[in-house]
Image 1 (cartoon, rainbow, N blue to C red):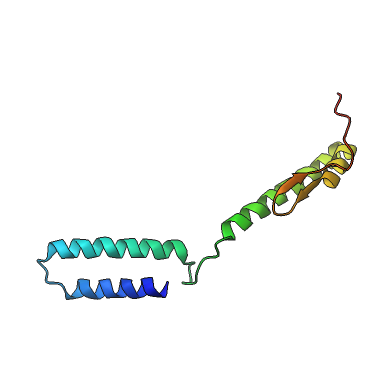
Image 2 (image 1 turned 120 degrees about the horizontal axis):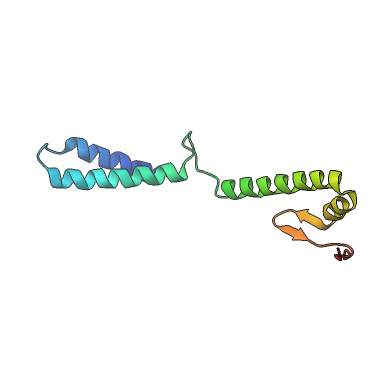
Length: 108
């Protein structure tokens, strides 16, 4: 990121040093500056530090875990045996796994 910031500052300096009627070079610099700023906005957080690569994935995993836990709690109130079964059988770690200790009788 330091190299990109240095390149960005260099391009901005070049832009300031251009003659006003050098439109071709000016447009190229505007495009380059735009690309560099876009890149930095994607890889930096709001205080200029590198974004965590797994930040979004971890938030998504956490949201899924919370939703499953809430659904199982709600289900346990309505159908206690099914709720217990799911709480014992569903593991939410890096991925969601349904691994029952005993197979339920699914006949309705």
